[in-house]
Amino acid sequence: MRIADYSVTRAVLERHGFTFKKSFGQNFLTDSNILQKIVDTAEINQDVNVIEIGPGIGALTEFLAEQAAEVMAFEIDDRLIPILADTLRDFDNVQIINEDILKSDLQAHIEAFADPSLPIKVVANLPYYITTPILMHLIESRIPFVEFVVMMQKEVADRISAGPRTKAYGSLSIAVQYYMMAKLAFVVPKTVFVPAPNVDSAILKMTRRQEPLVEVKDEDFFFRLTKIAFAHRRKTLWNNLISYFGKSEETKAQLKDSLERAGISPSVRGETLSISDFAALADALKGSGL
Ligand code: SAM
Image (cartoon, rainbow, N blue to C red; front, side):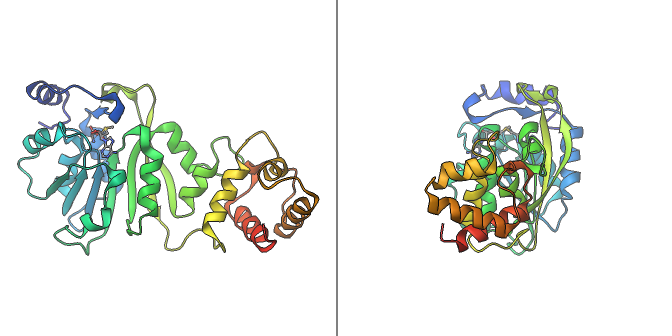
């Protein structure tokens, strides 16, 4: 029997008198086949340490602990800590950390792995209300995670993995793809969770690039430009640029000159630009003094 088996999950929840907290994004997985597929997608073995975010009652943690060297799981909800001590009592390679992942000093924690030199993968069924902040928090930490295999709302997985000239493509696609190669691994139906969420889910596999996808002079400015270009999706790039930078003749001349130098027509929409186009434009704008 597995923690994820519906009858075991129900029994655990009842034994501990646990009630779901919607504000923590609590939708627990009750399908062992899907959990095995997640662990297979992440290619977990004894030479890998795993960080899990939001273990819940330990459905995924159980699978991870069986296959990884060590698992460190961050859980915000105090009420789940005694439950996890119960459900995962047979494992001595799991550490549960009762902290909000967004406030956690990850670097300090990972030094506590028995073998901190092993590659670290992040595997999780994420709380959907903070998927993007969690991903950005992990990506922007200086920790060299080799891979993320995480479940999220399908719509967010589509946005992250989207390419130019699609509706889903935007600043989030670029923010993640700059650092990681992102691929949608498989879709998960609502019916395998308790309680069932309102949306479909997907597993996204993101593998860290050796180097960021493009080289830019100023990363903050590059990311800001991607947000500016998608601020109003129906507007042209030009209109988004002048709404942000201003309409003075001098600014317009600088914008025109930068677009020309980057080889981009002002009448296109942001969604037609590749990540290299954004890099070229960011560098040209920076060079023009904007
Ligand atoms: N891994 C379990 C599973 O698959 O059944 C539970 C996944 S559930 C979608 C998300 C989990 O993340 C919940 O246990 C929730 O309490 C926890 N959580 C929510 N916000 C968190 C945060 N900021 N830091 C750490 N854990 C969080």
